[in-house]
Length: 178
Image (tube, rainbow, N blue to C red; front, side, top):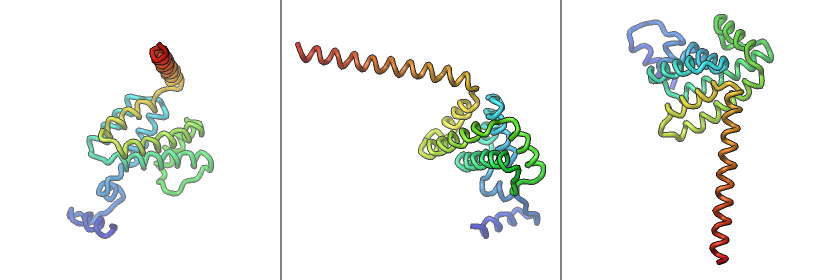
């Protein structure tokens, strides 16, 4: 609860309590971490996304909290893009949000919200949270043309599997008839 968080803040001997200190205590990632990885995804920059992911994992941040913050941040970019208003951010953070909002279409933001929400559900039940998270970050950084190639390959594979399944059924029927 809030009182125990306040007590933990005071225990370190400093009389200063700020937002970063509280976020650190409760495991909420700092704005820069969230901004960096979302920016990397929007720019299709796999290297930066993986580096940001490694930074988060090396600091021991909870991936569930991090994903929650990512979803909220992408939603806030979408809201800013639509209304040009946000109240929860300082001026520097608003400038970064403004810059990102000019670089990405609304539908990509909506798509990211859905994809990150699905990832949040998958990670909740996974034994390999960091592996699933990193794989999804790579997938989210795939340019549309790369994803189209993957989809075509995946569709062909599914068709081949279906043909094999139908062939097996045909062979079994012929054996039964003999």
